[in-house]
Each structure stands twice: as structure tokens, then as C-alpha cells.
Amino acid sequence: MSVVGWLQAVVLFLVVLALTKPIGLFMAKVFQGERTWLSPVFVPVERFIYRISGVREDEEMPWNTYMFAVLAFSAVGFAWLYLLLRTQAWLPFNPQHLANVPPALAWNTAVSFTTNTNWQFYSGESTMSYLSQMAGLTWHNFVSAAAGIALAIALIRGIARTTVKTLGSFWVDLTRACLYILLPISIVACLVLVMQGVPQNFHAYQTVTSIEGVSQTITGGPMASQEAIKELGTNGGGFVNANSASPNENPTPFSDFIEMLLILLIGAGLTYTYGKMVKDTRQGWALFTAMSLLFFAGLVVVYWAEAAGNPLTHHLGVLGSNMEGKEVRFGAAASALWATITTATSCGAVNAMHDSFTAIGGLIPLINMQLGEIIFGGVGSGLYTKLVFVVLTVFIAGLMVGRTPEFLGKKIERREVTLAMLSILITPLLVLVPTAIAALIPAGLATLNNSGPHGFSEILYAFTSTNANNGSAFAGLGPNLFYNLTTGVNMLFGRFAEVIPIMALAGALAGKKAVPEGSGTFTTYSPVFVALLIGTIVIVGALTFLPADALGPIVEHLFSLQGKTF
Image (cartoon, rainbow, N blue to C red; front, top):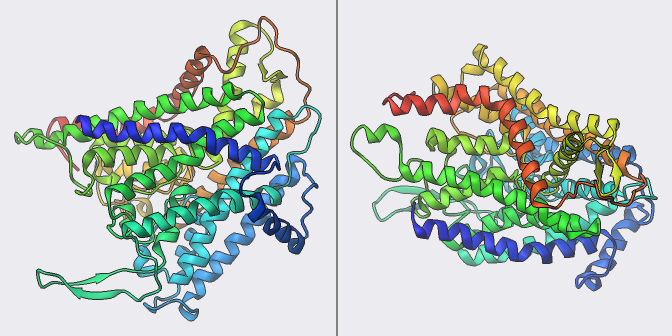
């Protein structure tokens, strides 16, 4: 580890910290219908969208109607993308004349981008036409991220409101998330990335001869526009197979910094939005603190493991950073930082291959996702999942002091705890059961790149990533019909089966009368609460996933210390 390596992380965190309040305050104003500096430009556009779509801005929804709107919108978006991928060979903006996407892969990809997972069982540059990239994948990058933000805002309203039982309008929240937040930031980010050298064109791929005399194909296309929203919306799906390790998607150290900043920006900002909307910003800063502590704990371990090098080479007397699978322009420090960021959120973009990390270096990204994507998390999904853990922590604290638990003055009763626990239990069910099945049947073992514990880690990582709507991969697991179908189902349930009880929780809290704080009220912004919240998250994750992790990365590390590999 080096001072320069840590300086990168510290500078990035300080920039995120500085932007958390302004971006969070801006989002709070947007979703509360207040005037912002963008209102003169976008209010007429917003009203025009409502007029042509038949939406009434002042017509709010109860939780079940709100959730139905999310599901209906997602179903239409899925059908649109599936149809586009199955017919792209006959449509324009296909200069490479790429074929239609096969049915199983089209299903998996349509589910992936609809659920904000962006899991990719294909190489983008050889599979997707420019039209599919723009009108299909990039469009979903906007609306799936906006849907996540809308769900988080709905839960915040449920927590904050004491006289109104509705949660707002999904159509209004979706429109405002796209129009005021995702689109303006993406335009600026796209221009910055173009300045750094990311392509943004409709040219066919170019074949050139390198200075070594070797023929090479240079990809082009509308890449910068997809790259911007891919990171900002914590989507993660790359325009090309190498993702952000590609010099086209991520050409310079500055573009690397900007892309990491985009991944964290909205997830961090929503913590302040939450504090502002519940009228106590200390609540938001408490969540930000818990997220930051978990983030740096993971970063320390990943950076240490990658900087220390592979234990297998130590037997040969070779010391130094593990550079296998790393982009040499960025090095082990930036790769460790990116891997921690992309799995502490639900982004899934990579600038290094996690399959080539050391066993312990690969364990932390796995754990980050197994904790429920609550370390900043995806846009919206990180916050609403974090608030579920807050409810559970408040309940545990109430048991410890022997009184009815309260959250912002509202009594947390049986129904709320049941819904919170249901949401939390969905993750291990959808990760561990299919992992066990895949590890036992021939179809699950057929496309593994490695045997032994590393091969098991590839399976475990795949189902963890798809369930957590992350989309990153160990990259050693190849596609087949079994994995296309099972990971697709896992992505669907990982997104919607988890959020349905969360929305029901929002509905249960909405309109509930708040009681004044008393001397026995457990404050949910104190250092003690932050410590208890972190403890609850870690204990739930450790008790659930530790046996599976022990069979994969932990066993692999112990074998590597003995000079054995798989």
C-alpha cells in the first residue's frame, strides 16, 4: 500500500462529502415540488409530459397502487427491450450488421436492464447494435435508476407523513428523477468524458494497423452518453466487454476519478434528501456515517490484499502487488478502490477483473453485495434497503431497553417488523438456494472456468450479484441456458420481491401518528445508534452467508497459503 494510493481514496471521499448536501438538498426540493434553479427550463417540459400522458400532478397513490405502477412500467420496459434485441438485425444504426440476439440471451438481458442489474452474458461490441445500445440499454439505464429513486422517495414519505396515507405519484416521481436529476448530470458528465477521449459517434468500427504491424479493430459508437448514465444510475453495463477497463470507456486517470464519483454521487446525496424530508438532517448524516465506515472497512481489506500480492507467488520469492487482471494505467490502488465502490453500490461496472483478485480481495466485493447493497447502495435501492435495517435496529434497541420501539416518533409494531424481516430474508433465500443447486447439477458446472473453491466462488458471486441487482461478475462463469434462465429469474425477484414488502412497510408507516420524544426514546442519529446499526447489518450478513463464503474465498485463501491453486 502507498500514500498515493490512499490519497486517491481520501480525495474522492472528500469530494463526495462536499457534494452530498447540495445534491441531497436539490433532490429534496425536486421531489417536494419546490422551485429550483432548473425550474424555468424544465417545468414547462414536465407539464407537457403530464399533459400528453394523462398524468395529474396532484393525484397521489396508496402504496399498492404505487407498486402496481412500478411493476406495470417495468413490464412494458422489459417487453420493449426484448423486442428490440430480437429484431435489431432488421433495424437501423447497425453498421456492423450484427445478428438478432438469441431468445435466452435476449430474455436475460431484458430482465437485467429492466431491474437496474445490467448483468451481461455477452460482449457488447460484438452483440449489440448502436440502436440497441441507445434506445434499449441506455434508455433503461435512465428509467430503471429513476424507478429506484422514486421508490426510495415513496418510503421516505411514508416515514415522514403523519396525516396522509398516500406516498405520492410514481409517474411524477419517475419524470422528475429523469428530468431534473439524471438527465442534466449525465449531459455534463458525457461532455467531460468526450473531452477525455471517450467516443461518441455513429461510425462503423475501424480496422487499423498498429506500429507493431498488427491489424486491430477499434470500436466506436455512442459510448460516452451510455457511460455517463451507466455510472450515475449505478447501472454498470459496459458498451464493450472490458467495461471501464477499456481505454475507450475509461481513457485517463481523470475519467477514472469522474466515473467513480458518479457512481457514489446520488446514493450519498439521498441520505441528505432523507434527512431533509423527515425534517431532521441528523438522521441522514447518521446513515451517511454508517455507510462510510462500512465502505472504508472494506476498502482497507481489498487494498491490503491486492497490494500484498498473491500468496502463491510468495512461495517463489516474488513479492509485490497483484496486477493480474488489472488495468496497468490505474494500478492496484485504483482497482481496489473501484471494486469496493462498485460493490458498495449496485453499479457493477469494473476497471479490473474481480476473477483475478486474490481470494481475500474478491471476498470483500462479495460481502458488500451480501450485506444487501446498503453501503451507499444503488440509486434509491441503497437508501430504502438501509432504512429497512434502521427499522430492524430500532426494534432490537426497543427490546434491549424494554419499551415499544419508536422510529421518528412512530411506534414500530408487529406488522412493520414482519415486513422488514421479510424483505431482508429474501436475499439469502435467492442467493444460497440457487447456488447450492448450480453447484450440484451438470448444467451448473458445465461453464465454470475453475474448479474447487474458486469455481464455487464464481457460482456464488453470480447469484449474489444478480440478486443484489449489481451486475458485476467474477468473469469466470460462462453463459448457458441454465444460467441465462436462473440468473434472469434471480434478477427479477431480487428487484421486485424485495421491494414489495418495503412499499407495504411505507404504506404501514404513512399516516401513522407520531408521539413526542420522551426520556426513554432511543435517538436514531447518535453514535451509539450508528454502531448498533452497523452491528445489525454485519451480524445478519455474517450469520447468513459466512458458511457459503467459507467454502469459497476463505478456503481458497487457506489453500493459496499452502501453494495450491485451482
